[in-house]
Length: 395
Ligand SMILES: Cc1ncc(COP(=O)(O)O)c(C=O)c1O
Image 1 (cartoon, protein in one colour):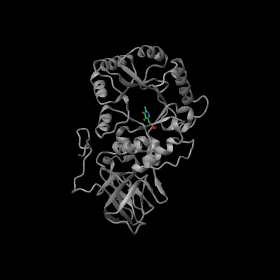
Image 2 (cartoon, helix red, strand yellow):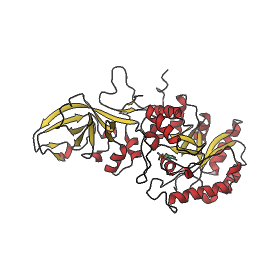
Image 3 (tube, helix red, strand yellow):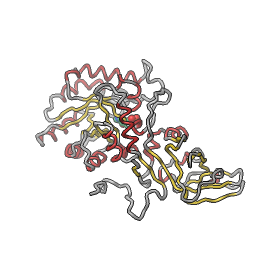
Image 4 (tube, protein in one colour):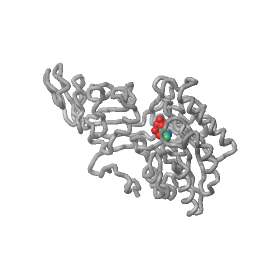
Protein backbone atom coordinates (compact mmCIF):
# COMPACT_ATOMS: atom_id res chain seq x y z
CA UNK A 1 0.00 0.00 0.00
CA UNK A 2 1.24 3.49 -0.75
CA UNK A 3 0.88 4.97 2.69
CA UNK A 4 1.82 8.43 1.41
CA UNK A 5 -1.78 8.81 0.29
CA UNK A 6 -2.95 9.60 3.78
CA UNK A 7 -5.01 12.47 5.10
CA UNK A 8 -1.97 14.53 5.92
CA UNK A 9 -0.39 14.64 2.51
CA UNK A 10 -1.81 17.56 0.57
CA UNK A 11 0.72 17.39 -2.25
CA UNK A 12 -0.82 16.45 -5.60
CA UNK A 13 -0.07 12.93 -6.71
CA UNK A 14 0.53 12.33 -10.36
CA UNK A 15 -1.48 9.61 -12.02
CA UNK A 16 -0.22 7.45 -14.87
CA UNK A 17 -1.50 9.92 -17.47
CA UNK A 18 0.38 12.96 -16.12
CA UNK A 19 4.14 13.06 -16.35
CA UNK A 20 5.51 14.91 -13.29
CA UNK A 21 8.42 16.14 -15.42
CA UNK A 22 6.21 17.71 -18.07
CA UNK A 23 6.28 21.29 -16.82
CA UNK A 24 8.37 22.08 -13.74
CA UNK A 25 9.55 19.86 -10.92
CA UNK A 26 12.10 19.29 -8.17
CA UNK A 27 14.48 16.35 -8.36
CA UNK A 28 15.78 15.15 -5.02
CA UNK A 29 18.90 13.06 -4.64
CA UNK A 30 18.52 10.72 -1.70
CA UNK A 31 22.16 9.69 -2.16
CA UNK A 32 23.32 13.29 -1.72
CA UNK A 33 21.44 13.50 1.59
CA UNK A 34 22.92 10.19 2.75
CA UNK A 35 26.46 11.21 1.77
CA UNK A 36 26.12 14.67 3.33
CA UNK A 37 25.02 13.12 6.61
CA UNK A 38 28.01 10.75 6.51
CA UNK A 39 30.43 13.58 5.78
CA UNK A 40 29.01 15.80 8.49
CA UNK A 41 29.01 12.96 11.02
CA UNK A 42 32.68 12.35 10.33
CA UNK A 43 33.36 15.84 11.74
CA UNK A 44 31.50 15.24 14.99
CA UNK A 45 32.96 14.77 18.43
CA UNK A 46 33.12 11.12 19.54
CA UNK A 47 29.71 9.65 20.40
CA UNK A 48 27.90 12.75 19.25
CA UNK A 49 24.60 11.91 17.58
CA UNK A 50 23.09 13.51 14.49
CA UNK A 51 19.52 14.75 14.47
CA UNK A 52 18.34 15.40 10.91
CA UNK A 53 16.06 18.42 10.83
CA UNK A 54 13.33 17.57 8.34
CA UNK A 55 10.69 20.16 9.19
CA UNK A 56 8.80 22.03 6.45
CA UNK A 57 8.65 18.87 4.33
CA UNK A 58 12.38 18.35 4.60
CA UNK A 59 13.17 21.99 3.72
CA UNK A 60 11.01 21.54 0.62
CA UNK A 61 12.78 18.37 -0.55
CA UNK A 62 10.18 15.78 0.63
CA UNK A 63 10.45 14.77 4.27
CA UNK A 64 10.03 11.06 3.56
CA UNK A 65 12.91 10.88 1.08
CA UNK A 66 15.12 13.05 3.27
CA UNK A 67 14.36 11.17 6.50
CA UNK A 68 14.91 7.72 5.02
CA UNK A 69 18.21 8.71 3.44
CA UNK A 70 19.42 10.68 6.45
CA UNK A 71 18.82 7.58 8.57
CA UNK A 72 20.79 5.51 6.04
CA UNK A 73 23.63 8.02 6.45
CA UNK A 74 23.58 7.58 10.21
CA UNK A 75 21.11 10.13 11.57
CA UNK A 76 19.72 8.68 14.80
CA UNK A 77 16.92 11.17 15.45
CA UNK A 78 14.67 13.47 13.42
CA UNK A 79 13.45 16.98 14.18
CA UNK A 80 10.17 18.41 12.88
CA UNK A 81 8.28 21.61 13.60
CA UNK A 82 4.73 20.38 14.04
CA UNK A 83 2.69 17.51 15.37
CA UNK A 84 1.32 16.84 11.91
CA UNK A 85 4.82 16.59 10.43
CA UNK A 86 5.78 14.06 13.11
CA UNK A 87 2.65 11.95 12.66
CA UNK A 88 3.23 11.90 8.91
CA UNK A 89 6.74 10.49 9.41
CA UNK A 90 5.38 7.81 11.75
CA UNK A 91 2.80 6.89 9.06
CA UNK A 92 5.73 6.06 6.74
CA UNK A 93 6.95 3.51 9.25
CA UNK A 94 9.87 5.65 10.46
CA UNK A 95 10.68 4.52 13.98
CA UNK A 96 13.67 6.60 15.18
CA UNK A 97 13.04 9.17 17.95
CA UNK A 98 11.33 12.30 16.61
CA UNK A 99 11.48 15.63 18.42
CA UNK A 100 8.89 18.33 17.76
CA UNK A 101 10.80 21.60 17.77
CA UNK A 102 7.71 23.82 17.90
CA UNK A 103 5.68 24.37 21.05
CA UNK A 104 2.71 22.16 21.97
CA UNK A 105 0.72 23.72 24.78
CA UNK A 106 -2.68 22.01 24.90
CA UNK A 107 -3.48 18.75 26.65
CA UNK A 108 -5.05 17.50 23.43
CA UNK A 109 -1.92 18.11 21.32
CA UNK A 110 0.39 16.74 24.00
CA UNK A 111 -1.80 13.59 24.27
CA UNK A 112 -1.66 13.14 20.48
CA UNK A 113 2.09 13.63 20.65
CA UNK A 114 2.38 10.90 23.31
CA UNK A 115 0.11 8.46 21.41
CA UNK A 116 2.25 8.82 18.29
CA UNK A 117 5.51 8.25 20.14
CA UNK A 118 6.76 11.77 19.44
CA UNK A 119 8.74 13.91 21.88
CA UNK A 120 7.61 17.47 22.60
CA UNK A 121 9.85 20.43 23.34
CA UNK A 122 8.87 21.73 26.76
CA UNK A 123 9.40 25.32 27.88
CA UNK A 124 7.25 25.63 31.03
CA UNK A 125 6.58 23.70 34.22
CA UNK A 126 2.87 23.82 33.37
CA UNK A 127 3.51 21.77 30.20
CA UNK A 128 5.62 19.33 32.25
CA UNK A 129 2.67 18.79 34.58
CA UNK A 130 0.34 18.11 31.62
CA UNK A 131 2.85 15.57 30.25
CA UNK A 132 3.23 13.99 33.67
CA UNK A 133 -0.55 13.56 33.94
CA UNK A 134 -0.72 12.02 30.46
CA UNK A 135 2.09 9.62 31.40
CA UNK A 136 0.38 8.76 34.68
CA UNK A 137 -2.97 7.96 33.10
CA UNK A 138 -1.17 5.57 30.73
CA UNK A 139 1.04 4.07 33.44
CA UNK A 140 4.07 5.09 31.42
CA UNK A 141 6.70 7.81 31.29
CA UNK A 142 6.22 10.58 28.71
CA UNK A 143 9.56 11.22 26.92
CA UNK A 144 10.33 14.85 26.21
CA UNK A 145 13.11 17.40 25.76
CA UNK A 146 13.42 20.56 27.86
CA UNK A 147 14.47 23.73 26.15
CA UNK A 148 16.22 26.65 27.79
CA UNK A 149 16.60 30.10 26.29
CA UNK A 150 20.18 31.33 26.23
CA UNK A 151 19.80 34.22 23.79
CA UNK A 152 17.32 33.45 21.02
CA UNK A 153 14.27 34.74 22.97
CA UNK A 154 12.00 32.26 21.22
CA UNK A 155 11.08 29.03 23.03
CA UNK A 156 12.61 27.75 26.25
CA UNK A 157 12.59 28.16 30.01
CA UNK A 158 13.96 31.47 31.25
CA UNK A 159 17.67 31.03 31.79
CA UNK A 160 17.63 32.31 35.37
CA UNK A 161 14.70 30.05 36.36
CA UNK A 162 15.87 26.85 34.78
CA UNK A 163 17.73 25.28 37.71
CA UNK A 164 14.81 25.79 40.09
CA UNK A 165 12.34 24.43 37.54
CA UNK A 166 14.56 21.48 36.69
CA UNK A 167 14.74 20.44 40.34
CA UNK A 168 10.92 20.36 40.44
CA UNK A 169 10.70 18.52 37.10
CA UNK A 170 13.05 15.82 38.37
CA UNK A 171 10.45 14.93 41.01
CA UNK A 172 7.76 14.15 38.42
CA UNK A 173 7.51 10.38 38.11
CA UNK A 174 5.76 10.00 34.78
CA UNK A 175 8.02 11.97 32.53
CA UNK A 176 11.40 10.99 31.13
CA UNK A 177 13.63 13.94 30.26
CA UNK A 178 15.46 12.62 27.18
CA UNK A 179 17.13 15.86 26.25
CA UNK A 180 17.99 19.40 27.29
CA UNK A 181 18.67 21.89 24.58
CA UNK A 182 19.04 25.48 23.51
CA UNK A 183 19.22 27.20 20.13
CA UNK A 184 21.88 29.52 18.73
CA UNK A 185 20.70 32.84 17.33
CA UNK A 186 23.81 34.09 15.51
CA UNK A 187 25.99 31.06 14.73
CA UNK A 188 26.19 31.98 11.04
CA UNK A 189 27.48 35.51 11.73
CA UNK A 190 31.05 36.39 10.80
CA UNK A 191 32.13 36.98 14.41
CA UNK A 192 30.83 33.65 15.73
CA UNK A 193 34.30 32.30 16.54
CA UNK A 194 35.44 35.41 18.42
CA UNK A 195 35.67 35.01 22.21
CA UNK A 196 32.99 37.53 23.15
CA UNK A 197 30.54 36.89 20.35
CA UNK A 198 26.93 36.23 21.32
CA UNK A 199 27.36 32.68 20.00
CA UNK A 200 30.24 31.99 22.42
CA UNK A 201 28.29 33.62 25.24
CA UNK A 202 25.27 31.43 24.52
CA UNK A 203 27.47 28.34 24.67
CA UNK A 204 29.04 29.45 27.95
CA UNK A 205 25.66 30.22 29.52
CA UNK A 206 24.35 26.82 28.46
CA UNK A 207 27.42 25.07 29.90
CA UNK A 208 27.06 26.95 33.18
CA UNK A 209 23.46 25.78 33.55
CA UNK A 210 24.40 22.20 32.79
CA UNK A 211 27.03 22.32 35.51
CA UNK A 212 24.50 23.73 37.99
CA UNK A 213 22.16 20.79 37.43
CA UNK A 214 25.07 18.30 37.70
CA UNK A 215 24.50 17.01 34.22
CA UNK A 216 27.48 14.64 34.43
CA UNK A 217 25.48 12.51 36.84
CA UNK A 218 22.52 12.20 34.48
CA UNK A 219 23.31 9.58 31.92
CA UNK A 220 20.21 9.41 29.78
CA UNK A 221 19.76 13.08 28.96
CA UNK A 222 21.06 14.18 25.56
CA UNK A 223 22.46 17.71 25.51
CA UNK A 224 22.24 19.63 22.26
CA UNK A 225 22.83 23.18 21.08
CA UNK A 226 24.15 23.34 17.52
CA UNK A 227 22.36 23.88 14.22
CA UNK A 228 24.38 23.51 10.98
CA UNK A 229 26.40 26.66 11.58
CA UNK A 230 27.10 25.76 15.21
CA UNK A 231 28.13 22.26 14.19
CA UNK A 232 30.58 23.60 11.63
CA UNK A 233 32.05 26.13 14.08
CA UNK A 234 33.64 23.34 16.10
CA UNK A 235 33.45 20.51 18.59
CA UNK A 236 32.86 22.87 21.52
CA UNK A 237 29.33 23.15 20.20
CA UNK A 238 28.65 19.45 19.66
CA UNK A 239 27.73 18.13 23.14
CA UNK A 240 25.75 14.82 22.80
CA UNK A 241 23.87 15.65 19.62
CA UNK A 242 23.67 18.24 16.82
CA UNK A 243 20.48 19.31 15.03
CA UNK A 244 21.38 19.78 11.39
CA UNK A 245 19.21 21.07 8.57
CA UNK A 246 20.71 23.28 5.87
CA UNK A 247 24.12 21.56 5.62
CA UNK A 248 22.54 18.14 5.27
CA UNK A 249 20.75 19.49 2.17
CA UNK A 250 24.15 20.46 0.75
CA UNK A 251 24.61 24.13 1.60
CA UNK A 252 27.02 26.11 3.72
CA UNK A 253 25.28 28.32 6.29
CA UNK A 254 28.38 30.34 7.14
CA UNK A 255 28.87 33.61 5.33
CA UNK A 256 32.57 34.30 5.83
CA UNK A 257 34.10 31.48 7.85
CA UNK A 258 34.95 28.92 5.20
CA UNK A 259 35.42 25.26 5.99
CA UNK A 260 35.23 23.18 2.87
CA UNK A 261 32.97 20.28 3.66
CA UNK A 262 32.41 19.12 0.06
CA UNK A 263 28.68 18.85 0.57
CA UNK A 264 26.46 17.95 -2.36
CA UNK A 265 23.28 19.91 -3.08
CA UNK A 266 20.41 17.43 -3.01
CA UNK A 267 17.89 19.54 -4.90
CA UNK A 268 17.61 20.20 -8.64
CA UNK A 269 14.90 22.59 -9.78
CA UNK A 270 13.98 22.06 -13.41
CA UNK A 271 11.46 23.40 -15.91
CA UNK A 272 10.56 22.65 -19.49
CA UNK A 273 10.54 25.16 -22.32
CA UNK A 274 6.89 25.27 -23.40
CA UNK A 275 7.17 27.89 -26.15
CA UNK A 276 9.86 29.69 -28.19
CA UNK A 277 9.47 33.05 -29.95
CA UNK A 278 11.74 35.64 -31.55
CA UNK A 279 11.24 39.36 -30.96
CA UNK A 280 12.79 42.32 -32.76
CA UNK A 281 15.11 44.88 -31.12
CA UNK A 282 13.28 47.39 -28.89
CA UNK A 283 10.41 45.11 -27.82
CA UNK A 284 9.18 44.93 -24.20
CA UNK A 285 8.97 41.62 -22.38
CA UNK A 286 6.51 40.58 -19.64
CA UNK A 287 4.42 42.66 -17.20
CA UNK A 288 5.53 46.26 -17.01
CA UNK A 289 7.81 45.71 -20.02
CA UNK A 290 10.73 46.01 -17.58
CA UNK A 291 13.02 44.33 -20.11
CA UNK A 292 13.41 45.83 -23.58
CA UNK A 293 15.36 43.79 -26.11
CA UNK A 294 18.56 45.47 -27.30
CA UNK A 295 18.90 43.10 -30.25
CA UNK A 296 16.77 40.62 -32.14
CA UNK A 297 16.13 38.18 -29.30
CA UNK A 298 15.07 34.55 -29.08
CA UNK A 299 12.97 33.90 -25.98
CA UNK A 300 12.14 30.62 -24.31
CA UNK A 301 8.95 30.61 -22.25
CA UNK A 302 9.21 28.27 -19.25
CA UNK A 303 6.30 26.85 -17.34
CA UNK A 304 7.37 27.97 -13.88
CA UNK A 305 6.59 31.15 -11.96
CA UNK A 306 6.00 32.71 -8.58
CA UNK A 307 3.01 30.47 -7.88
CA UNK A 308 5.56 27.65 -7.85
CA UNK A 309 7.59 29.54 -5.27
CA UNK A 310 10.09 31.40 -7.45
CA UNK A 311 10.36 34.73 -5.65
CA UNK A 312 9.25 37.49 -8.05
CA UNK A 313 11.96 39.77 -6.74
CA UNK A 314 14.44 37.53 -8.57
CA UNK A 315 13.07 38.81 -11.92
CA UNK A 316 15.93 39.64 -14.26
CA UNK A 317 18.54 38.60 -11.66
CA UNK A 318 18.92 34.87 -12.26
CA UNK A 319 20.28 32.63 -14.99
CA UNK A 320 19.32 29.12 -16.03
CA UNK A 321 21.53 26.29 -17.22
CA UNK A 322 21.14 24.25 -20.38
CA UNK A 323 23.89 21.93 -21.62
CA UNK A 324 26.30 23.53 -19.17
CA UNK A 325 25.70 27.06 -20.55
CA UNK A 326 24.05 29.92 -18.66
CA UNK A 327 21.08 31.89 -20.06
CA UNK A 328 19.64 35.03 -18.42
CA UNK A 329 16.04 35.17 -17.27
CA UNK A 330 14.49 38.40 -18.59
CA UNK A 331 11.42 40.47 -17.72
CA UNK A 332 9.16 40.06 -14.69
CA UNK A 333 8.61 36.53 -13.45
CA UNK A 334 4.87 35.91 -13.81
CA UNK A 335 2.59 33.70 -11.76
CA UNK A 336 3.11 30.55 -13.82
CA UNK A 337 5.73 31.37 -16.43
CA UNK A 338 9.01 33.17 -17.04
CA UNK A 339 11.02 34.18 -20.10
CA UNK A 340 14.66 33.38 -20.77
CA UNK A 341 16.95 34.93 -23.37
CA UNK A 342 18.20 32.00 -25.46
CA UNK A 343 19.45 34.04 -28.43
CA UNK A 344 22.92 32.48 -28.08
CA UNK A 345 21.63 28.91 -28.12
CA UNK A 346 21.12 26.64 -31.08
CA UNK A 347 20.03 23.60 -29.06
CA UNK A 348 17.09 24.81 -26.97
CA UNK A 349 13.66 24.01 -28.36
CA UNK A 350 10.14 23.46 -27.07
CA UNK A 351 10.39 20.53 -24.66
CA UNK A 352 14.00 21.25 -23.64
CA UNK A 353 14.70 21.08 -19.91
CA UNK A 354 16.41 24.01 -18.20
CA UNK A 355 17.96 23.92 -14.75
CA UNK A 356 17.15 26.74 -12.32
CA UNK A 357 18.91 25.37 -9.22
CA UNK A 358 21.50 22.62 -9.00
CA UNK A 359 24.69 21.75 -10.81
CA UNK A 360 25.52 20.61 -14.31
CA UNK A 361 29.11 20.10 -15.46
CA UNK A 362 31.02 23.06 -14.06
CA UNK A 363 27.95 25.24 -13.56
CA UNK A 364 26.35 25.49 -10.14
CA UNK A 365 23.42 27.65 -9.05
CA UNK A 366 22.51 27.40 -5.40
CA UNK A 367 19.76 28.81 -3.17
CA UNK A 368 22.58 30.70 -1.45
CA UNK A 369 23.12 32.65 -4.74
CA UNK A 370 19.40 33.34 -5.08
CA UNK A 371 19.12 34.44 -1.47
CA UNK A 372 21.94 36.94 -1.96
CA UNK A 373 20.17 38.39 -5.02
CA UNK A 374 16.79 38.93 -3.37
CA UNK A 375 17.80 39.82 0.18
CA UNK A 376 16.60 36.52 1.57
CA UNK A 377 18.23 33.46 3.14
CA UNK A 378 18.70 30.00 1.59
CA UNK A 379 16.31 28.46 4.16
CA UNK A 380 13.51 30.71 2.92
CA UNK A 381 14.27 29.99 -0.74
CA UNK A 382 14.05 26.23 -0.13
CA UNK A 383 10.86 26.47 1.91
CA UNK A 384 9.16 28.67 -0.68
CA UNK A 385 8.65 25.93 -3.26
CA UNK A 386 4.99 25.09 -3.53
CA UNK A 387 3.25 21.76 -3.72
CA UNK A 388 2.46 22.43 -7.38
CA UNK A 389 6.04 21.36 -8.09
CA UNK A 390 6.17 17.57 -7.92
CA UNK A 391 9.12 16.16 -6.02
CA UNK A 392 10.81 13.34 -7.90
CA UNK A 393 13.43 11.18 -6.20
CA UNK A 394 16.27 10.50 -8.63
CA UNK A 395 18.45 8.08 -6.65
C1 LIG B 1 15.47 24.45 16.92
C2 LIG B 1 16.19 24.23 15.63
N1 LIG B 1 17.25 23.43 15.60
C3 LIG B 1 17.93 23.20 14.47
C4 LIG B 1 17.56 23.79 13.26
C5 LIG B 1 18.36 23.51 12.02
O1 LIG B 1 18.97 24.68 11.55
P1 LIG B 1 19.91 24.66 10.26
O2 LIG B 1 19.02 24.48 9.08
O3 LIG B 1 20.54 26.01 10.27
O4 LIG B 1 20.86 23.56 10.44
C6 LIG B 1 16.46 24.64 13.26
C7 LIG B 1 16.06 25.29 12.01
O5 LIG B 1 15.59 26.37 11.90
C8 LIG B 1 15.75 24.87 14.47
O6 LIG B 1 14.69 25.67 14.51
